[in-house]
Image (cartoon, rainbow, N blue to C red; front, side):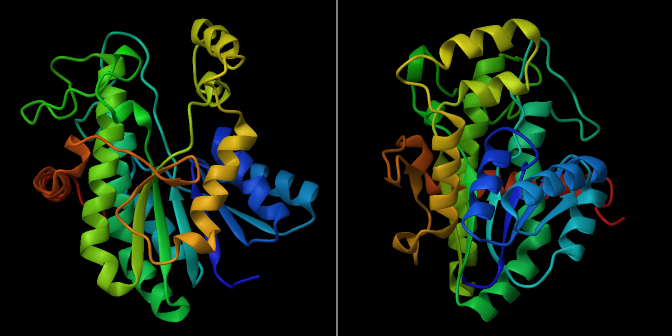
Length: 294
């Protein structure tokens, strides 16, 4: 097996946990994260006991800049692939504000991913020098497509996180559009260093949403899991593993991946000016928020 760890951010439950298990069964060196050290260690130990293959659990809270930098500093060398799958699915009609001053959906799904990539960049570049290439996969969704299931993004640069005019599904769809922009801008900035960045839709996985939801949505999502358009946890885990390891993706970057190949994304997601604008907005926001050093 090729050397280098595979990092799954958000690997303690849902698709991330299923992917960690699959990759471990395939013999890969996996590092999974959870928001607490106890949870990360517990899940990693449980999977390792089942698969009979070592696994590491590490604490990472993408809302906490000190946690992000501790994580980046503690990562072993080299890292072969990173899947950023930390996600917040909003509930209720009122925005949940975080200490950053941003609404939680955008803060976790987008700004946290940006901060994590920034903190990991030196490690990723060093790993690429050792291995030849490193992959980063940002988890997105086909819900970024306009009119998808009657929904879709409505990105407003004057209210990026929708904290003033909050609509839960629009906030989620916007965050998935933003993840494609981040992937494409990160690819542009890092490809000369051997770091390739893509966005991935693993499918609509109702059981993963149910795990993060209140009782009413849990029941609804469990019913949806029987629909023909639903994706199982095992299928989504296979998509993660493919994006992280498949030889066919060597040299590929800046793509929107789905169904085990490059997939159609919206015209808006291909706007390079918007991708750069979002990156710069996140960078400027990061600079004015409290210090990211522990």
